Length: 290
Image (tube, rainbow, N blue to C red):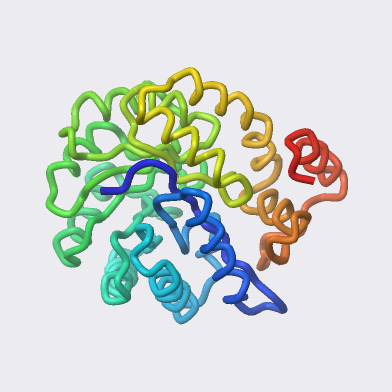
């Protein structure tokens, strides 16, 4: 259902407000350059600092702007199960194709707690749901055994895997049904995850190089591993540069440099350290972006 090239799209801001004009242009550019799935209101979209009204409106705007040309997988996760249900229900009502649900952060649930959390959301809101495992952000790791259990729950259709653990990815791919989709949540590991049986990526770097991410996943799908691998190596340094500071600081800074949107972020995220800006610009210049 959700495969190929996906973008964890940023939320552009201007003077503290969501810049819908810039967001509309960004969506059009993503579609034009071959991206298949747009993911608003995720980590890269600064969901943690969006108000409920903004969260809802950004999803609705993306759905309306996309006009069914690409799939919209809306970030609706929370460390409160009831809150996640509310956000997921709104995404469904707004016309999103699915919901991306991060593992509960801060309260550090057990594996059983996470299983029950995701199961309740899936049973309450009838919309395709993709799990999101990113232990570096949440302090909890959704283990393969739990993912395998959840893969049998109606409406749970896949996982965005950003644990960085390829053994974990291998266990999941090997033990879930063929129609359960494993997506890369780390740009630098996408080619490797595709090789293990993953079906695509939810990318950060595709905010600035959508065509190359789309080309890499498309080449792999077509069996052109040499082209896909070459694109992986071409993008590798830029992929790493997107994480020299906390995401989305580098990608928003890069988008500001490129004139795609303002680099504005919301506190507690702050502008990139002056010492890191030249490093980012060098990688961007080497890539031909500036």
